[in-house]
Amino acid sequence: MGYSKKNKVTIIGSGPAGLTAAIYCARANLEPIVFEGFQAGGQLTMTTDVENFPGFPDGVMGPNLMDLLRTQAQKFGAKCIMKQIDKVDFETYPFRLETENEIIETDSVIISTGASAKLLGIKGEDEFVGRGLSTCATCDGFFYKDKSIHVIGGGDSAMEEAIFLTKFASKVTIVHRRDLLRASKIMVDRAKSNKKIDFLWNAEPIEFIGDKEKGVYAMAYKDTITKELTQVNTDGVFIAIGHNPNTNLFKDILNIDSNGYLITEDKSSRTNIKGVFASGDVQDSIYRQAITAAGSGCMAAIDAERFLEENHEL
Image 1 (cartoon, rainbow, N blue to C red):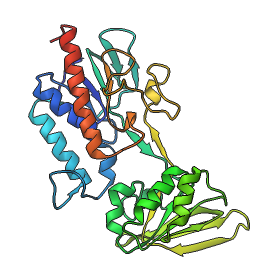
Image 2 (image 1 turned 45 degrees about the horizontal axis):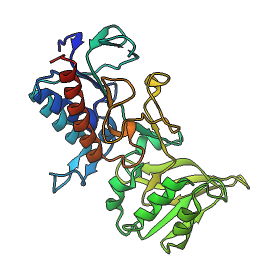
Image 3 (image 1 turned 60 degrees about the vertical axis):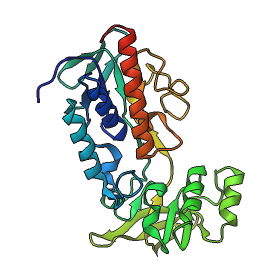
């Protein structure tokens, strides 16, 4: 697909935030270019049923939802390019973006590169993500009604996920590699007082075990004290050891908080550089939902349009 190397709006990232921004920008005749990266559609392409996105009472497959958003953006004139932006130059104007083999000039940029759940890097992990192995309790908890599941982690996010999952699961076991949690006292107290929550201490997961039909059905772990290896049955595993926002490209260029998320001005998508906007999980460490990402993509598109109007680029 041909596209201009000089654009009004360039969107980096193609999850719910990036594609919603593309829809709004395209309908405003801004002719946006979306650089999808190498995982077009973002994290939702790794999920199966999505049941909490408005408008789909019977649920929708994650990849199908992203295909629909992409088709809608393209219908209004957005162009989606399966290339990755490797370098940005926000000191010159128009801004300059570099792929592996070309330079793009753009009057505004919307960053929607998302955040990636931290994983353990153990055997079976890649194979079973989305098939009994999840990184989002809010997204997938409903599928584990009356099931016995495990949550891996020892921080506040793990406690929050475990407590949330007790709304559905019959039993939730928190797996931690030490015998002391790093979560805040209030979150630890809430977890320990929940009758559905149990703890597996000094346990370091080493493998997720399953098959194509059932998905994950067991987890192997090593006792960090005795070094003994054990296998436990499970109906599902949630990894809750945090997220890494995909902001490496913007370090020392844009303002980033202590956890690596892009900082935006209050109630807007504006970054510290005029004409550069951020939306979705790359700037959201709290909600991390497809629908909130989509909403912030809408905000970024409107902010970008207003910026272009004010700077007489339209």
